[in-house]
Each structure stands twice: as C-alpha cells, then as structure tokens.
Length: 71
Image (cartoon, rainbow, N blue to C red; front, side, top):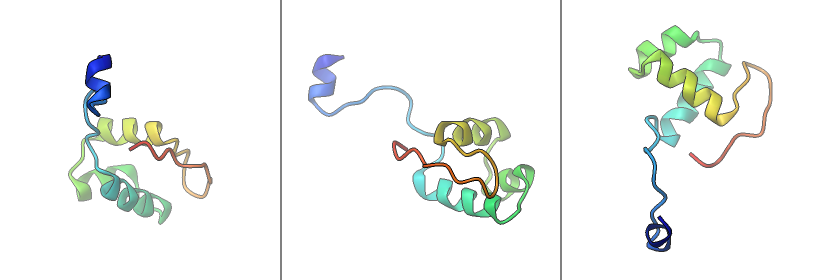
C-alpha cells in the first residue's frame, strides 16, 4: 500500500456519482425535489444516493453544512 501511495494511488472503490452530478443532485434537492424523483432523473439507485449524501454531509434542504470536498 505504501508503494502504491507513493505512485499516486489512493486505493478503494471510486465514487459511484461524479462531483458534477453530485452538484446537480444537490441543486435539485435544495430546490424541493424528492429523493425518489432525483433517483429517476439521474438514474441513480436510491441506496447509492443515500450513501453519497451521507458521505458529503448533506442534512436536508436549507440546512447549510460545509461540504466534504474529497469527492
């Protein structure tokens, strides 16, 4: 693992939703869209959406939390 890190590798599974799509999803949720409609629109499984929202620290519409920039 240490040798891989020196070569610039991080390891682990890459995020299922890229940063650009996460921004679009957050905008939709902040605009009042339901999680179900977001899943249909962006073709993302609900479990993946929930995991991603938990990972970035989203707590709900209108509640401001410093976003995790390690996407």
